[in-house]
Amino acid sequence: MKPFRIGITIVGVLGLIALGYFVLRRDTTQVNVPVLASGSPTGIDTTSEVPVGNANKNGNDNRIPRAALTADAFEQLLATRPELAAAEVANLPEATELRDDRLAQLMEVWVEQNPNDAADWASTLPNGIFRDEALQELGAAWAISDAAAAAQWAKQSLAAGQLLPASALLSAWGRNDPDNAAKWLSDLSDSEETEIDADTLSRLTGALTYAWASTEPEAAAKWVAAQEDPGVRSRAIVNLAAGWAEHDPGALATWLQTNVPPDASEAQAAYVALASQWADSQPEVAGQWAAALPSGELRDTTLATFTSSLATSSPAAALQWSQQIEDTARRQEAALDIYETWLDDDLPTARDALIATIPTLEERAYQHDLYNLLHEKDPIFRDELYNLILPEAATAPEQNTPATPPEPEVRRALPATEEPVDVKAMAE
Image 1 (tube, helix red, strand yellow):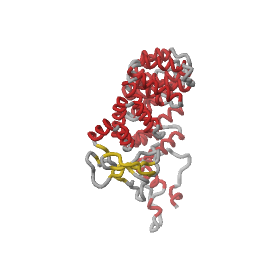
Image 2 (cartoon, rainbow, N blue to C red):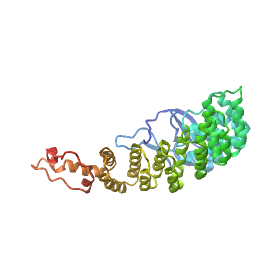
Image 3 (cartoon, rainbow, N blue to C red):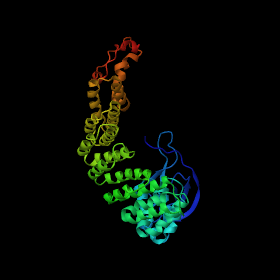
Image 4 (cartoon, helix red, strand yellow):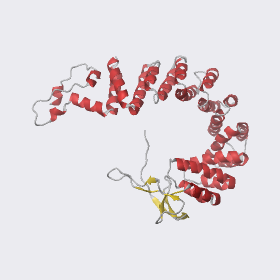
């Protein structure tokens, strides 16, 4: 469930970049790591570090200083040599606030100076998260400074098989000038010069709808309802719900009830998008809304999504709401998800709740699922269990008779077995 990362290969020296330090380029799946010349040049901040290579045998990362231009030095470089500033941004440690901020700053300035150069740089980056982020920031900045020119860039990119520039443009344009963005997309779909397939049109419509719904949801909803292609309209409704739910979930709930019947293909995704957002802002209202939905799969799925989202802030309340799920298997699955989140966030409290709950359940399979979850997540419970079944004293060579198994509190929570367990025989 938690991510990744294997190895790093340095492929060669790119050359002296600025203010006395060098840039080494690693393979295209990773950022570059500069190596400082002796001393710390003016304008360089060497306080941050980035892992390099695999962990050593002791489990410690090999780390070297990562040089970063100070804010003033970066602004000076950006004003005079944006291409070098771009190299500096690409060379910053990934997934950091510093790189995110400076990438946005880079694109804001560069599109004012020379947007075509900025577009060429972003488009030729290696495929990956950083390239996507660069194109997103470029589209956002360019849509504000010169939407017509940005639209031409996006259209050319589509002709070359690149979807992201147009999507990035519409994501920004849809917030600032949605009517013209919608007109451009409509003209594009009717154009014989740039033919786009139904899936591409659906994706672009979704990007525009999500952005539009964040500022003018009712207008966006009318535009979505007017889409003639069922597939395009279906995806647009889901994106409309995702964007609208962030700002006015109550209004969205009313709109869905009127415009999206429970058996519609997009109903489940739209209702789930609303439930997950609403759980964060108004959990009681959201729970009552979900529980009042017509009986069936849509209601159970919506409730399961709502309780899963609520579990991060109010697991006990989430468990109560999960009992409203009608399907037994779905209800138990939802409770297991809630307990898992709870154990990760607050193990002692979740452990007490589980120990109190397990003996009250009638279904043995469900008891065992909860029991196994507790065994997986709680080392203390696991040790108590092992001592209960196979006391440590029984394995000691100097003792001839196994010690009496301890009687921890957890023993009362264990499901009763059909046949008595001979603990002494197990120990021997």
